[in-house]
Length: 308
Image (cartoon, helix red, strand yellow):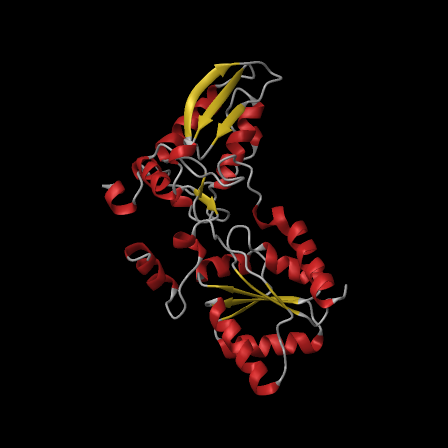
C-alpha cells in the first residue's frame, strides 16, 4: 500500500511516535562510545527541527535520506547499541549488511549509498530501484549521518558572494548592494547568513512557507515578507540605509525578478546587483523547482501527476 501511495516503502508502522533528537552520547546505552556517537548523529539527522522531511527519513536536498525505511532505522540502532569496539557496521544504501569483526583502530561504520551498475544508472532505473528500496541517495551528509545544517556551507557561500562582488562589481564593499537568490532549504539557508556577513541586502525567495518559517525561527533569515509590494519596500529601505540584512520572501523567485525589471523600467533604479540560485537541481520534481503562478501545494500535486 505504501508503494502505491508514496512511491516507496517507508514502513511507517515502525516509525517512532515521539520526535527524535540528538540524545547526548553518555545517555545512550551502547557498549561502544563510538557507536553511541553514530546513534547521536543519526538522531540529529532525523530531528524535525533539523530534517527537511523527517517522516520520509530525508534530511536535506529533497531526497537525501538517512536510511531506507523505518525498519532499517530500528535494526541499525539495535546493531549500534550492541556492537563493540572490535566490530564494524557495514551499511549499503540505507540497509545494514551486519556487524563484522574488526579492531579498535578500524572504522566503526563503513557506508555506501546510491549504488548503481554504471550501464544501468539512468534516472528512470534509479527511481524504480529506489521505489523497490534497494538503492538510496544519501546526499553528502544525510546518509553518512554527519549533517550540520546550513552552517556547513556558510563559509563557502560567504566567499562566493564576496568574490562575486569583486568579480562583477569591482568592489570589496557590498554595503547597499542587493543580492537576489532563491532557496531556503536544508543547505541554501546559508545564503541568508552569508548576505548579512557580507553586509549586503540578501533577498531569498522560497515557495514553501514551512521552510521559510523554519529558517526565520532559527535565525538564518532576519526578515520575512509575504507580498511583492512589502518586499520591494523592504529592499529599497535596506538598500538606502546600507543595512546588512536578509529578507525571506514567501513566493516564487520568478515574480521577484519580474518586479525588479518593472521597477527598473519605470524608475531607472537598478535594485539587483547580484543574482544567484541555490536549490535542488538534482531533484527538480521533488523540492527543486516550482512553476510560477502555482502555490506550493498546487505545484506539488502537478509535479507528481504531470511532471512533463
